[in-house]
Length: 296
Image 1 (cartoon, one colour):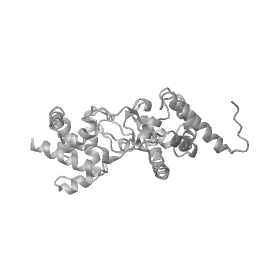
Image 2: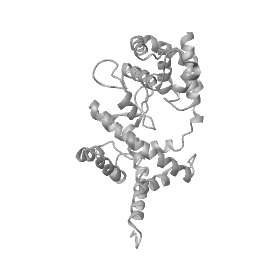
Image 3: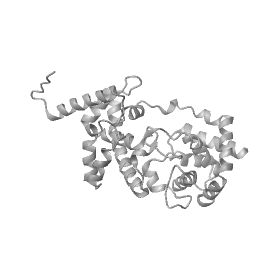
Image 4: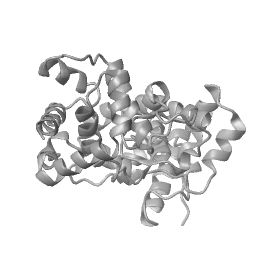
């Protein structure tokens, strides 16, 4: 087949090629690492201009496992907070799991409570809702998710991405464009934070798994929070959010940083928890779990 572009501009050609690459990628299994360079060239140039080492960036994006995550990020553009069932975390078996967690990690929880003034019941409730106490941390590549979302700043990549989104529960084009503008800027900042975090902790970003939104660890911190508010709770000179002691201390530090103080009213506690996850059902669920745990 011969494709004649005629007088079509370079952007249109690029858009066509990216759309074709996206289609081929999805047909091959979707979200794989095979054609990352087709989508991340502009993003790599941007990172290099912002001071990241050119050779390191090029090597990183050429690694096996790096790919354009249409499926994972696509969920982000269909997700509705109202669909989440927070009531499940108040079931008796979940409360019992949380009570056992408090027993098993009593030392770390007591240390965090003493240092930051955040009750162990609140910390445990957050860990329960975020990852079921470290049992469900997500299976998405945090690096791929953030790279894909950040790459949506490129109009050609964004157009190809839109065409491949499943139509079921898809946002309107106008809503998609508005969200893509906002989230691509946000994701780029989080991607830069991730690269700085893994450099400080001597980690391979490609191996870190988390949520479809890029949160990671037992406490589901975004990279910027891991970089600024993550705590080495066990004294091994590392901030490892996949370690219970570090995750517990980091949650407590986060809440204290955002205004948590002993003796606050429920409404004041509610306002602080909204800084962790801006969802009214989420904040109320955390407080309800903590009350159940306090009452035994």
